Image (cartoon, rainbow, N blue to C red; front, side, top):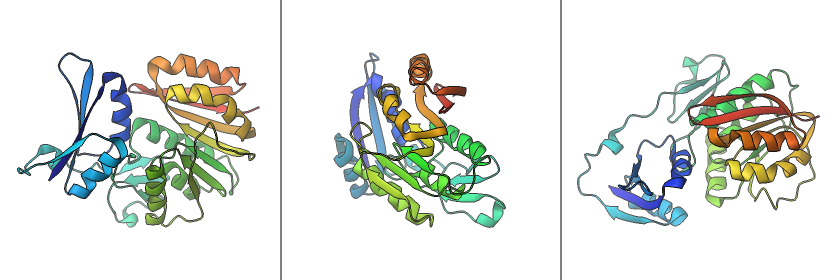
Length: 272
């Protein structure tokens, strides 16, 4: 067994939590003094630890004793999203979930499994809104991570689906997950929200990004939503919600509702 570890400022603890959410082998520990945290991920192979090190720096070391709680933690139970989707970390028998589409997202690398409060909240809103849309609606996923939102959009009836992430490894994992779930014809690519050259407009956009990025990117996102389209924002810490909401309204988005889940907020807007 191997462990990857990295010290980080405590202000980044939420970012690390979201990045490794759903991975039962990850541990975040606050260092005495309260200014730093230690992030650790336990891996069965050296290759797995090295892949994380390549992505985030830090260090790796071999562990002799394999009887670690982190490695024995049970897999999370499948997550039910309304009456339409099931998100699972392992292969399951789809006949156990009649009427639902099953999406399998293993907790590999560090791109989430769909059960983080920000992602699951986006999925619920996508399910609800998709019922009012005609088949073939267009969807854009900003900061796709594991690709679960893009995969879900196609299973909910979307036609053109585009998704991107600034992290090339996330793009690789998202494409792998799409293939794993038998969902093809998705455009998943590497891009930066601030430099992406886009002239298309989408009926639904999901932006699950950190608040600082959302605030700066909202004027760009406004140009990408079709009139009458829907914007789903997430990745917002509760204490940053007021600032994000004010920016969205400044960009002339029409506020519909928001919901807090733990320390995270997800909100929906229409575009005039």
